[in-house]
Image 1 (cartoon, rainbow, N blue to C red):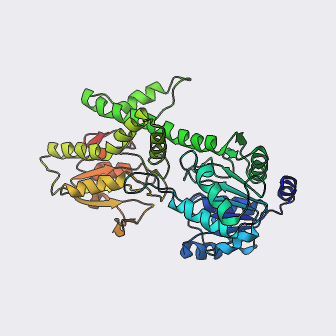
Image 2: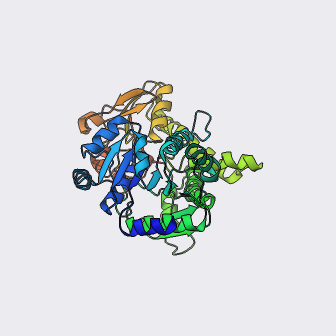
Image 3: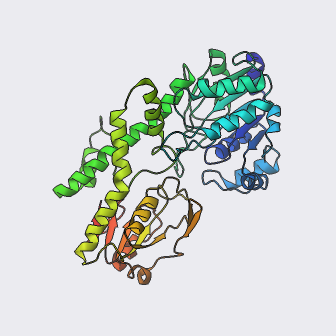
Length: 437
């Protein structure tokens, strides 16, 4: 099986399946197809499947032209029918792994996808989980489901591994194609074959580790590292405000040290799929071993409280202008979770808006990349545009995302008061109406 798969990889005769056509899955499917591997995308959302089959792109990191070419050339197609799994040799699982209402891992998408795959899988298939999850998922959950559903034995009839996604939406330098990959699989043969598949497709290095659990923990470490350091600067931002010191200036000074320091900056909270969620996966798994991740949990508490802290600061700014939060008209600039993208998953701007509204404020938002957002089934529409005439109608403008295509000089000229939680207005000289987090 090993030699057969390695030969098929070399000859580009492997047929690829990608389960989940979102921010991770669609870019991966496109790269597989561009590398010469005929690819099938699987998704339960018919709307996504229809768009892919029409060559219509909905992911920012995918080039429109690339998608159209590979679809029209027959290299990429999409379906909701998992019976086509029988035709593929390599399957990447790229489905969401959110938290449930109790802030515990919701692996139902992974579990349900694996069950569907197991019903149709054939001998000689490589299966790789890319969705971020807790250490042990591949071996403790996916392996028994596939073996029971397919009647195949891992290592003898199919290869199974974990290779964490590394997708940074909006990153101008690192995309799926050139970002290094980590692979951990069950057995040396599986690791070799799965790594060979990625090396054939990607330009980035492939780093092999000894097991799926190591790769799963590695992914958690990447994002927990950022979570903890952002928690540190968020806590220092609160302290520095009390001390009358600009943390932004402190960090800029500290990063002049050429070793031993990496700059992180404060903000209204954490956003995106990974950084706000991954530490919860680890702390949940740690309790199985009677272990509490105290440092991680502390940083999570700090970061989770930042939207509430930002509203407290906003209230104090309004008080200086003889205004109460209740009844004030507030404009929130930016609901994306990071600059210059249209992704609002776990965006800290949303709890900021909700807390403002809960305290009686009248809130509008403007985001040049997001015209509306859906939260718990309710659609909220933003302003079509902002100008000086519009800005001056608000008691306070809160900047929650550092988009680069907003005219901040115009905002400064028109606004009565500004709370800049991202320090995006640092280059503006006239600052009498600006306060920074």
